[in-house]
Image (cartoon, rainbow, N blue to C red):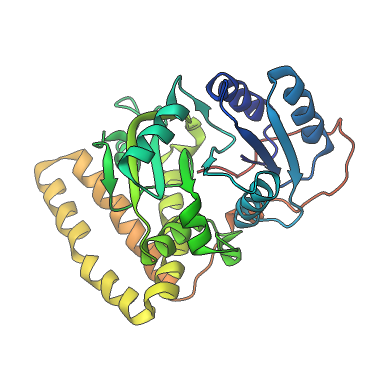
Length: 315
């Protein structure tokens, strides 16, 4: 569990995990990218309260990649023979039975990386742009082997793929930009990893209203695609990445014209998200970099009574 200045959400996550762990041999690692003594104290308190084998690590170098890499290193240090490593971000809570289903069905599928649904609470009451951006998570998917999964939240990594990719699993140069999950998945796929999906292994991760405005959604689409373009260049070369971009270029504009002609707001919204995503990819291919995870510098020591505020660590 990566965390950053979210004590109440971290508590809720751990409280939802405790009954799911049950009698299983589960070790839990919390990696804190703020080095806050209050979070260390909270983790120690919850280890006793929830009867969990719970461990805290401070990660003093700013970056989500650095946190995720430390989680894998610590898990291997604590339990050298672990079989599955499950990632939960600190703004989610588990639904009943989801951990058991994710792992048992993941093993039946024969996948190296298994993903489950993330329920963001986005629905018909939200704006069309937000619905278009979240379309992949809103659609149910059949259980089984899939080509790729969407993000690090609610995913299980098998031991084979972790050994195959090697340390650092999440590229350090994505620590401040994000897109580290896409980079890991893309590298794993290139090495022959198998991906699986378990649709009824769900985690709740409601998105705050401030992050569902048109401006916020389009900004995130732009920045994510810029970060992912770096991965495409690193894996396939800039020429291949540019060629792929050119191949995708026309379709959002074609759909936008169709949506305008038929006054279809959903098609227009989907096209706008696609166009902004293409602009982000083009910017990333041209060398543009954005660092949303640099919002605060690390404070390695501070009074435990200092206020905690929500930070940018979210997927």
